[in-house]
Image (cartoon, rainbow, N blue to C red; front, side):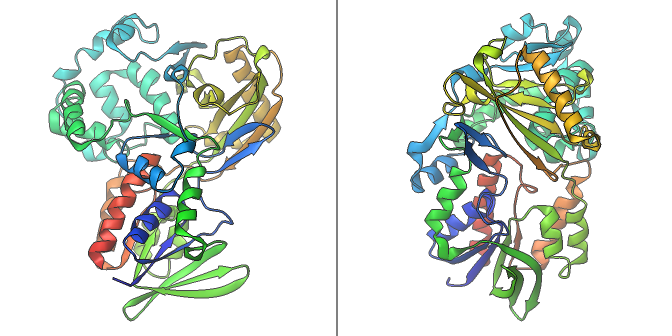
Length: 457
């Protein structure tokens, strides 16, 4: 059991996997291209504002999250979302409408027409699809719930979660639990009721009821705490993977660090790299794997963090934020009201917001001059929020490749990844392009991968 295991990538997936393996007493080394750990989890405290350039929060969907937080000693830094952040808004006809979260609110809301509400009652009587494997989330929702529910609930939701296009995302791969409700129970309403009982038995929470969490100093606190437990001798930063080859029973990782070429041998490699990096790392090793990984689409997304004096904001800050349906034809996807959801996100008397621009829905926006796009986004945001003054603080980050899109046909990629692992004992593929993109998904996947590694040993 003293074989070396090399993990590629020090994002939350790679670090969590490394931590479970370290607890087993195994020789684990993590290689990371960046000068710091965390991957997409990137937090900075600037001018009294706590800025998350990647994930703003996580949902506590698995007890593994709290287990990791407790064992890494940051339970006192973990914070949960304020109740004021429970309300979610959707933009319709230029006005913000609260998304109904229970049957009475659904019946009263003006977000959906009377026709759309009646259509929902037909859902239990809709049959299963015959082409579920290659069905988009748009087709799935339109068939089961109707066009209006797609336009004003699912379309903005998909933009908020994946920065994605519901016409292209696979319902089976991107929303497996939704797909399972139809396949196993015959419908969404029946499945939701029965599925809740199953989750209770597994001690899991649904994403609808799970508590939202973050940390006092932002989400990067989590991967940093795991890396500190691992220790600096187990993490090699500024290490760019060049290629992977095989020599006898060992795999050879060729990488550069600070301009120097280095080699590391290992019996087991766990790749937690994003697909667009993993494809080059394995290019000389497996052409077909390269093709599958290279074809995964990561749309561009700009994260725009804005700070304002509260007196300049003309509407109540009483929710999580808002999402924008494609039919509203705005230049950004939505806004999180960061300082409402968590404390310590803005100085006293100020409010902080995080806006998202681009995504699979509108990548062409970045063809416009940067200043022109910024002014357009700000103008639309100010009108929606009734803001009368310019922001007093601004920070932004452009993710040219943001979130992997589990598009129609993704099942073929998933099948090949499984085939590749069987054909190449000792190599495991991980990361948020497998098993889900959410923080909770990555933590759950880390346990699965860790157990696969133990089986290999």
